[in-house]
Length: 66
Image 1 (cartoon, one colour):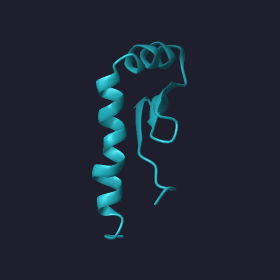
Image 2 (cartoon, rainbow, N blue to C red; image 1 turned 90 degrees about the horizontal axis):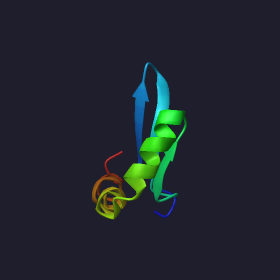
Image 3 (spheres, rainbow, N blue to C red; image 1 turned 90 degrees about the vertical axis):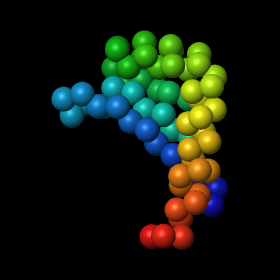
């Protein structure tokens, strides 16, 4: 169960701009705009905590389904 990760990616025109990865625990930007957004979004500790909680709420609860 420790191998499971929650990933939330944002794309525009098939280009990944920014991604939240529960293993990293923060947003990572892949473009200039993505890096700026990641810096801003990572300052919001409640948003980071909520996304980290999604790993347990969504991923771990549904592991037995598939």
